[in-house]
Length: 114
Image 1 (cartoon, rainbow, N blue to C red):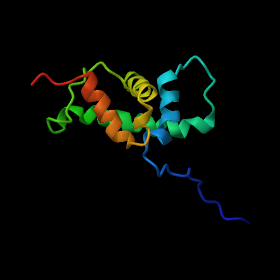
Image 2 (cartoon, helix red, strand yellow; image 1 turned 180 degrees about the vertical axis):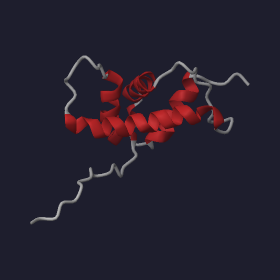
Image 3 (cartoon, one colour; image 1 turned 30 degrees about the vertical axis):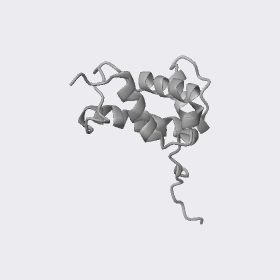
Image 4 (cartoon, rainbow, N blue to C red; image 1 turned 90 degrees about the horizontal axis):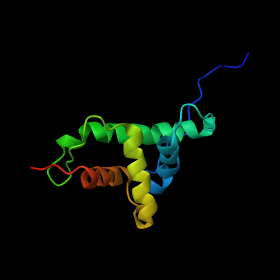
């Protein structure tokens, strides 16, 4: 009898925007009525969505240089679309830490008025 242990996906060890961008494209283009997303893309999409969601929730609490005032109705997919657009227009940012790129995009899109 063989021992049975749960399998785990290989964690994403590189937080560069370039490594996370493919998963973000899945999130940005997500259509629940379109079954084109393949299983191998789900981990990467979830990784991107988790980072974007976490930073959306924290955006108003950052220091003044990083803070953004994101409207409460903005969802993860909308923010992911903005991040993908930014990276497509600024390929020189692909080497940067993805989390820093998300914070930059949120701040530039929804700056606080204070």
